[in-house]
Image 1: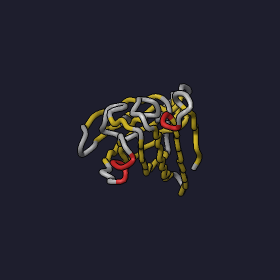
Image 2: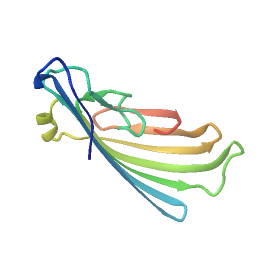
Image 3: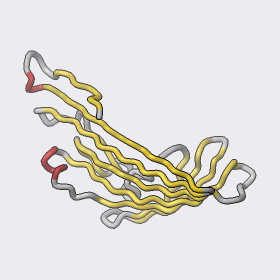
Length: 159
């Protein structure tokens, strides 16, 4: 873990102290043309006065798929994602590689540390086709969340 920042808000009082803690880890393994990755992150920001400083968000493609970008907000976030990629043996002319993949995601965002301790994780998932293009990774996927929505995602860049 690491303390990202710690600063005093206001003058001469610890009441305005702001602390932020972030930790993340990722592991990747490949078997032939199939790759598995596991990612996890926890983030938190605390302060005595409730303010917008330090708020985190989840939602969007591969960040709790099936929820809108930034739909889940809070000062505390826990998130994990298991991703599977299969590199197809052929690629279209405009891409260096073509992939089929899927994700299983779990996490949530909470306003307070006490609420975060209670859990209440949400799930999201996606299936997608990805291409390694000269502009960057390009994804076309189907997203779903049991407590969110089902949708289609077109994404350029790294989610």
